[in-house]
Image 1: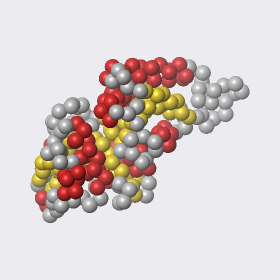
Image 2 (image 1 turned 60 degrees about the vertical axis):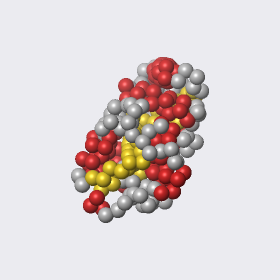
Image 3 (image 1 turned 180 degrees about the vertical axis):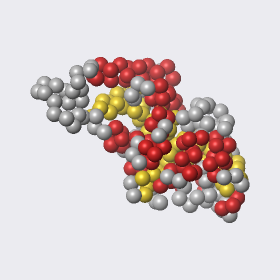
Image 4 (image 1 turned 90 degrees about the vertical axis):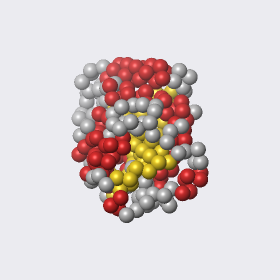
Length: 264
């Protein structure tokens, strides 16, 4: 079941629509989640700790979830949708909820501050500590074009490659595998087993001598999804901490799937 966080922002609603499409395509339900931060300050007796100022948080949250559900049903009218309002720090709450999900979906507003992504944002923490892929809805959303696998020759990208093949098969799209000629590596051998598992997926190679960040930006033009593996390291997103990883989220022209590696 895909799971997406709702906060009422335009980027959040775009994520809801993308999550609804993913859920419908996968034949599963959708969970809409809103996280409320518990106040750390003392509050008077009888006052809700998640709304110490009495600002009508409950009504606003319900309104945001109702709007999100309406958006989701416009995309997939028959979709089974559940709504959850949970208390706690958003990344921690969503990480817990995502353990039972097949995909977590977040809006691009969450990655506007790249330092925040690397050091504790929802998308960054979900991709490192979570157990499911994270779809960051950014750039142009399209149902045409290839699925791009970033750095398909990486030995640490097995989970990402498996996800990319499955996405290409489910979307009826070609798979474009990006690799860099100066690395002296070829993705052909490492992907042989997946080619056999997904015989209907047309795999094309994109060899590039350009700098990685430029190659990623170029490959994402006209694509419907970029898939990249994420490796956890000392509580940060190691695979996103360098220039290449930052470039994926800063310059991608389409949504990006961050797939956690459990063997790296």
